[in-house]
Image (cartoon, rainbow, N blue to C red; front, top):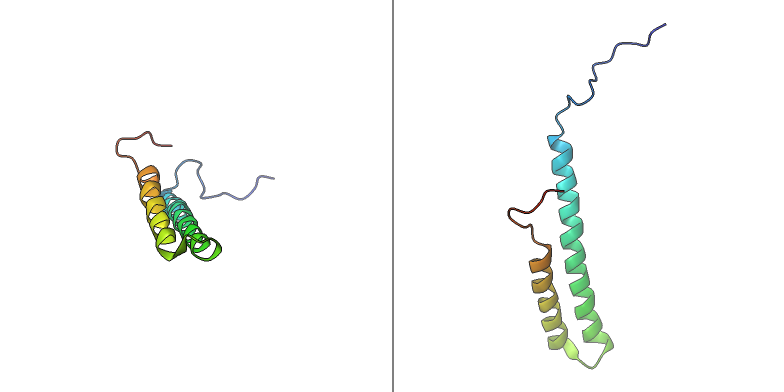
Length: 80
């Protein structure tokens, strides 16, 4: 006996929602990791060293600035 007929046809689905969800999750992961690393650096320098609050804040701002330059989406870059 043959199985029941299915409405599924390989390659015919619109995957726009899955693509948007994937990009959202990757963006949250990327930027969240950057800000978490900067926060940990600032707090470590503030509380665990003699550097103090301002040194921790400056280091965190530098990490965020450099991370933003490295992690931003490139225009005209190769799509993965």
